Image 1 (tube, rainbow, N blue to C red):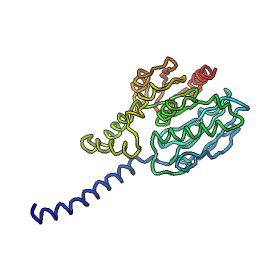
Image 2: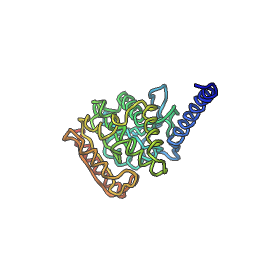
Image 3: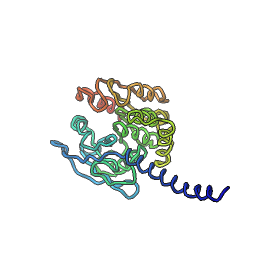
Image 4: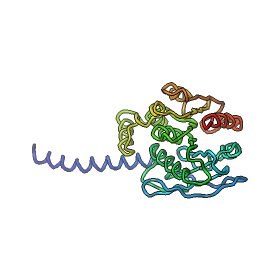
Amino acid sequence: MPLSAGISWLWGVPLLAGGIGGLNYFIRRGLAAPRVVESGWPEDLPWLEVTVPTVNDKNLHGWLLSAGDRRPALVVMHGWGGNAAMMLPLAAPLHAAGYSLLLVDARCHGRSDDDSFASLPRFAEDIEAALVWLAGRPEVDPLALGVIGHSVGAGAALLAASRQPAIRAVVSLAAFAHPAAMMRRWLAGMHIPFWPLGAYILAYVQRVIGHRFDDIAPCTTIARIACPTLIVHGLDDATVPVAEARQIYAARTSEAVELLLVPGSHDDYGDLAQQVGLLGDFLDRAFR
């Protein structure tokens, strides 16, 4: 190799490394969840502001709504960029139905601690930490714990239930079937070509979060869940097509999995009171 070519190659190595480092930085910045802090609280309900320890020595902000001694209890988890307040429409009817509720902010969301990144598996870790915390409360029946999650929180609820047999019931609201499909829709919306940049982004994200998308996808984890599970999806969901709910349901291995398709979009289910009534019916059967 000529000396001049060797020098050019040596200069190219740090330039390439710097370029990749810059690309990785912008990927993480572009995919970071927006932090929206709650501006309200559970009005007209008996609520207690709580701190829940989670992994990495972090703490979650939450609201505990107790329904009385030794009642079934539910962890309620929001979606990407959300917070506990966004799940409050579920609180009053479920509390009135006799369920204690723990609404939490995932790490990097709401009023919870920050961390190096947020991800579906980290949402699941926060759900599991909230369940451990709930089980230690004297007013909660530790043998009657369930989870309700929305969007990424729903995928995390399914992941948690696939590895935590103590979970008695799961309600999945608007879960996507596979993270790769969700990210490919995001790439298309950002006009980013899949090859080579989009493929690199998907590979980089899997490396950062420490999990293969195939392993954490709801269409995979649903096959490992034995407890009663309700998959709820809006028929007019433009963010996650309703076909993905059907895909998750088709991958089930337990007869305890149910599919409920309702009017509404990704975040708005229209007549929420009617839908919460159906959720209550499912939970009553699950905990019986």
